[in-house]
Image 1 (cartoon, helix red, strand yellow):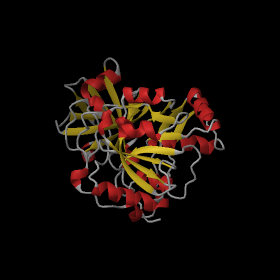
Image 2 (cartoon, rainbow, N blue to C red; image 1 turned 30 degrees about the horizontal axis):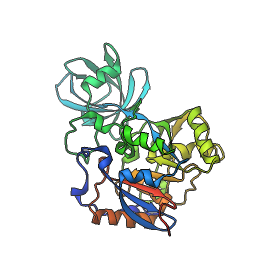
Image 3 (cartoon, rainbow, N blue to C red; image 1 turned 90 degrees about the vertical axis):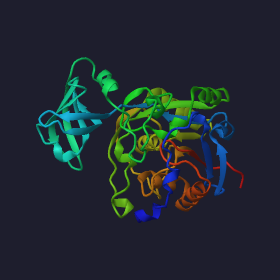
Image 4 (spheres, one colour; image 1 turned 180 degrees about the vertical axis):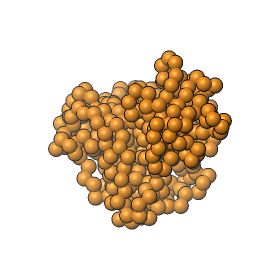
Length: 348
């Protein structure tokens, strides 16, 4: 497949720069691969679209305020460091910008010396390894000095850091938010549970590689970055019970989808407690074993996420849905509107 098969022209003004005042106020496009119909609803209509016995699976990762702005100790030049992954102890894999200023041995200070970092290795495409030096607890220092690592297409400052977190975020470790979950409030989750819809959680720490456009010209040649995931015994048991009782499993987000499909692929279609690293790449032709549907946002052209949703709903239907979204002035990307892909969500 050619990567250009997943391209589309998006007017820049449709890229949402700020979150809506109310999380649940977003629109919801409903895409039914069975009938090939598309409907335009509100996100709160999810309560009517799901049935008792269904299960929503959410990614409870928490975004680190991983963007640090510091100064080189020798020249005073400004450097941005974005934390990507903890290697061990106080050593982290990062992206540095401008990377040409950062060589092995470079020392950068943040917050008037509250935090210091020494470059211990140089990698490709701006990748750098740093060892950090500080007093106290690293994550507390990070909360004080770090900024939210908003995607580059968002130009506005975020007034409230928590608006780039889901209301159920628990486990720190992501470089970006699992944005499909940003539409939920605790009240909406309670309403869904009261209707008899199960709520389950897993963790996948989102890396920036998930959101980058595919650089290869041929889809099959693209390589995904690995991301850490964890699924508990309790969640595995709940999902097994839902499946055995005929309920539908609806993944909230592509990160949740990738985690569940990774686990079932290794366990003959069954849900098992597990933790590890996944670089699964889902594109048309993929056979889904874990999920029956997905809630997701609207994604970047030619991205691996466009390929994933096309694998679930069909490329032509997704491209039609995106064209309708553009014509109807939907909000796109991280702070944008949502899509529900679910077979049988509309009568044929």
